[in-house]
Structures are given as C-alpha cells and as structure tokens.
Length: 209
Image (cartoon, rainbow, N blue to C red; front, side, top):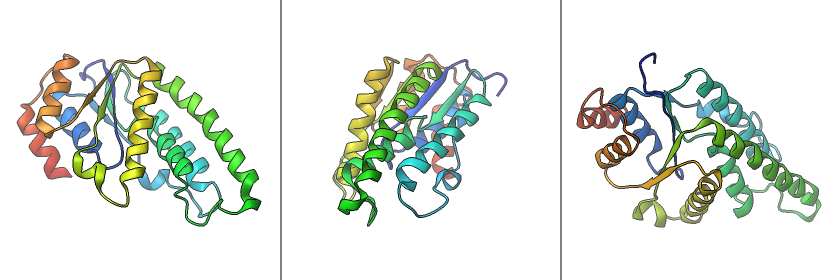
C-alpha cells in the first residue's frame, strides 16, 4: 500500500490467540498492509519423517520472507518469521508427532532434527531483528490456556515465543482482551494513523473471520 505507515509490525502468539483478527483489524484501521502466507502451501508435501519439523518451518519461512519483502516499508505480519519455527520446535520438544521418531532406531533422525531447529532458530531470530520495528504478542486467554488436549502445546509455544521476543531486543507489547481494546492499544503505542474508526475495522475483521 503506497501510503501505508513506514512501520513493520509483527503479531505473534500461540495458535488460536487471535492473530489473524488482530492483523486484519489493524490493517483496516491504520492502513498498514497485511502480510500473511498460505497455510496450505506451508504444509509439508508428504507425510514422512521430519516433514513437520524440518520441511514445514523452512517452507513457511521462505514464504514469509517473500511476502514481507513485497510489501516494502510498512506492514503488519500475521505470525512473523518466528511462527513456523516455534510450532516445529514445540512439536519436537513435546513429541506430538504421532508414530514418527519414537523408536530407538530413530535416534539419528532426532539428533538431526534437534540440531536443525537450533540452527534454524538462529536464522529466524536474526531475520526478525532486522525485519521488524516492533512486536505485539497476544496472551493466551483463560479458555485457550486450559483447553484439553492442546493446553500444554499452546502454553509451550507461548513461552517459547515470549523468550525469543526478549532475545531479539526488538520492542514488544504483550496484550490481550477484547479485539477493539487490543487494536486501540497497539495503534496508540506505535503512534499509528487512523484510516477508519477502530470499531468499524474490528466489525469488518470479525465478519471476515
């Protein structure tokens, strides 16, 4: 968007935290372009060892770099380049991978997977430092944080993302609550212009959900 603010903002959070709704409303309210990727294209192309923890984060990272680069100086990113890596690392650490990599003979795959994700973490963190001017991290609400069987998975991703945001040294805001309050708080903190009323932007984002 030619006249969008020159701010590169990323919205992070565990799955189900409301990132897409927040990004949509922020984009409409402030004029920031909306950077996202196709979840379908980011999925592994085959059901095989390491597809979810090696193939998927790389495909997602490549798409995000391309998508954000095309938008120039101002955008709001739905998830950021950290997202697919954080999901993959949580899958690895909580071993939510079905039958893959559970047998003793799969040890070489597990070692490679761990080393790969450590290396990939360095890449995505460096990219985040140089790409974004600020982060907004969405807290898990009480229902999302306690819902079974996803509670541990979501909580681990949430903690991993918060620890990583601190590591980047990029300014970040941790927030939650009603969508309109979040958008108003973020727009105020980052001194974003108002293209349309926040209430209208939020209503449009909710209709699009």
